Image (cartoon, rainbow, N blue to C red; front, side, top):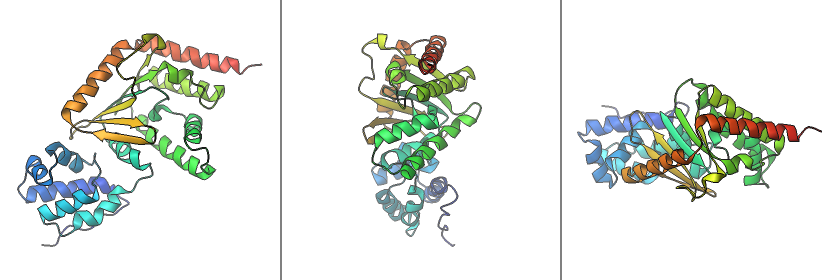
Length: 279
């Protein structure tokens, strides 16, 4: 019987690669846990590869070909599934984000990417690398705005964002940019497209002072958590770690303003930014 065909890079390579992995695993009579044991990874990691929420790395592809007897199929197609328009440290989370059924996010220093306007995203990227050519900046902005299309769907994914008041008061791009950015967030909240709360400066010390985090849930794969730092990021699927960070997010929610008061604060700040521009 002929082996599987190489993947077409234009048609969701990661999803197709995951489907082929599931087919090959079941053909070999292995459960996800059993295959994971042979690869020295968890069964949930195998499940995430099959669901397309985790990127298949070259060393894993080589092991899969050896264990499943797939004649180099996964190694040949691993490169196609790895292509991304995002920075290396963020590409995996951007693709997982697109398949999530629920996203819970806290960012202490800026408005989350999924909620950014073009002008705000441009200001962030220019600050990130002030020496980058204009066309490079615009490419980054386009990639970030493409992620926001997730919110074009009326209900999924659920997005629950806790915004730090410090990020709302930091004049990223200037007052007009901030006024537009905050009006955009308020509009999403008023349309009930985003569950949004503000963690006020008056809350003082809190459970996530060390950095940003994003929790993602999926219909057919275990949850993931993503931490982010300066030019770096890390994704985790360890159940204990995910549960611990979910508790941290719950503590943030408990310390944040109510949704109604959060919306009132954001609209008030947007109005202040707009009025300060008037002569």
